[in-house]
Image 1: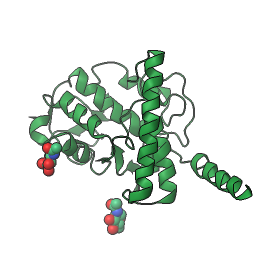
Image 2: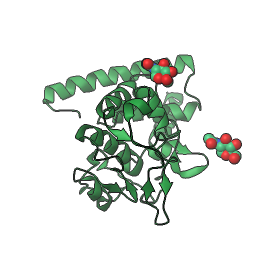
Image 3: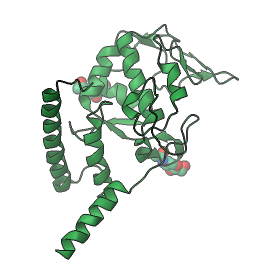
Image 4: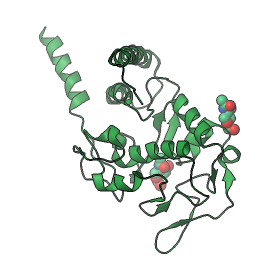
Length: 242
Ligand SMILES: *[C@@H]1O[C@H](CO)[C@@H](O)[C@H](O)[C@H]1NC(C)=O
Ligand SMILES: *[C@@H]1O[C@H](CO)[C@@H](O)[C@H](O)[C@H]1NC(C)=O
């Protein structure tokens, strides 16, 4: 009984007390805190690494620029493509969990955040007819002296720059994202992320890499069950999850 209590305590401690701060980018707070007045990125209102002010520039479509980075260098993005681009921007700037995947050599950057295959495929579908002049959004621009981005190469449809959703997710933001083999232990930038995050965080306390077989398949199972229940609950509430 005592051993059980201690184990339980250890589990609770490692899963809830493990606090990450925020990424150290140019807009992030030192630590996440509630932001009831976010205009965009409201997925992160309860605990946010961005200030409400920051989200103002994302709140009006078309989005022209975010910080110094112009989104319209190859013309305005379609609404559907813009919506996906916003989800990524919101995650990077506002998610209190982003720092869980902090890049070892760059505290402003993330590495290997697991995205769901379906999210990447939908994102690709949304953007494939839009144009872009970089393959890697982080490195392929020419930056002028005031820090603004300019195209070096010609504008080309996403569908010619990236082979598919996987290629896009794993190239557009450098090493920031990878496509997960799991359909549950992955992020899709909606409310379901809270389930995935729970298992992804508890997983990280035991193992460093992503592919140990037995424990990760039980995590997978538990996650899938939880997701199923979440779906049912939402249907009963008659509420949209996206
Ligand atoms: C971090 O920097 C070291 C030393 O320059 C390098 O060997 C390593 O590959 C870098 N890690 C990543 C993930 O880029
Ligand atoms: C996506 O594109 C990559 C790179 O060209 C390729 O290796 C992979 O097989 C493609 N995946 C699918 C599902 O078509």
